Image (cartoon, rainbow, N blue to C red; front, side):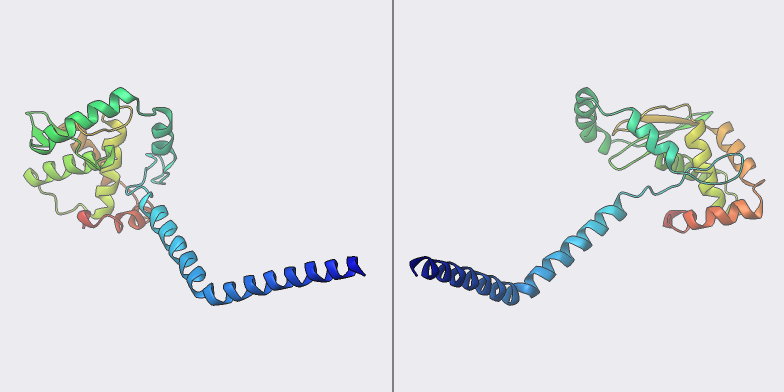
Length: 200
């Protein structure tokens, strides 16, 4: 008899706990769902912000892959020395010019948030400011900046204060090659061009 009473008490305690948990869940369901939605939205924003802004173009086909840039980033992890020197330079660079023109080239210096592609974009913009070419579309410019990135001679990652030199001859060559792209290649580049507002 005593055992039955103990078993009944345990069962009623368990049932009471289950009921309390169920009530708490029902009372707080709205909050739990809201938190879950916020986490999903934050994850989506984080994922979207990590996408690369400019694609990589294969010279042979006009097809674009992000693999090359991602692989080069993985191969060279930043060292403490690089991080420290980039932090030291950050303040100095912000007050100085980030573009310089020589007789034969444009030298672009990275500021916070710049990549090799963005520096190539700046060099192209500097060149076109002095040598306007109305025949170039946003698709042509995507191709040109990628061509400059691949052929600038710079290897490794870009940190604040990193300078990359883009020769004027290289820029002219990239412009010339972009004008030889066929309609399929330009169409392929269109989906990337629309992502970069500054090119239109």
